[in-house]
Length: 166
Image (cartoon, rainbow, N blue to C red; front, side):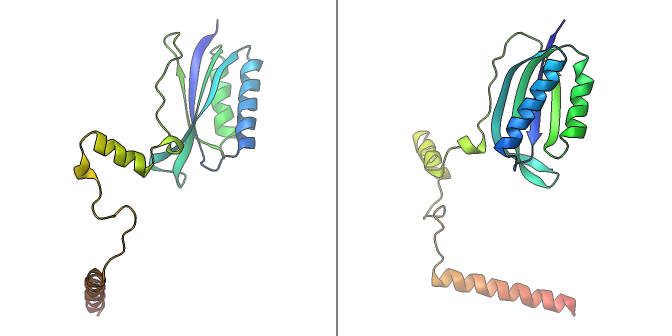
């Protein structure tokens, strides 16, 4: 009897379309060999990670759902660890409890709202106090007085560093 499983994969952010197609083909071949079937193979998109993994601050998530006998799980784990170690940074295999394939996918960085969308959202929800003041978001240049203060503070810091070194 075949069980339903899902695999959530986190790949390196530099994965190419060719590597993605090869990943899907290899995964499909492995599941077909075990008399199973792929239900869905989705690219969720690029996300900022909570902490760096293998030196990467970002990663691309894929969700694969399939039906297969339990015997394929060991082979699938080895497939990720041995063959795809340079592409897949993390993977998680879970058995699905119900027959539902419905889920709420979070928005990726590619789908994230732009700054204009955020400004409109804040205004619509009466949160104008959170909007940056005086063109901070546009990269407003400092005036001459602000530049002098900044330079003076920097010189003071350098003097303190030199005095502690002596």
